Length: 149
Image (spheres, rainbow, N blue to C red):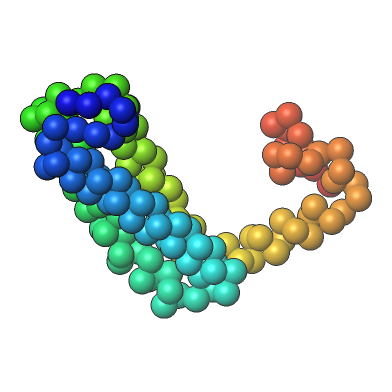
């Protein structure tokens, strides 16, 4: 085994496994980025069709998490990596959890909430009231106190 490069190994198969994990991580990142972008668009435009597509496609992100998680654990068990390769695998195990959570948050953003538009409009009007400046923050009169007029 040479020590000239961080990613050189005696096994081309091992390098291919690490490259596959890197590629799958990047694909999952692109997937989640697309979910967040689309969910924001669905929210702003109130596009129910797009929102439903996002919600129905959530399983893809979940499947990607499980696939990457499985690959990482398999490589850890079979190859017993060290140094940079071990850091890559342990980071990937943590990263997929975070990416999956961001994907779930994107689904939550896209999920229609009945009456949310009316509440958001009423909240915007309340915040425009100059008497509310000293109560900014929690919407309840500051410091958890109820708002009285």
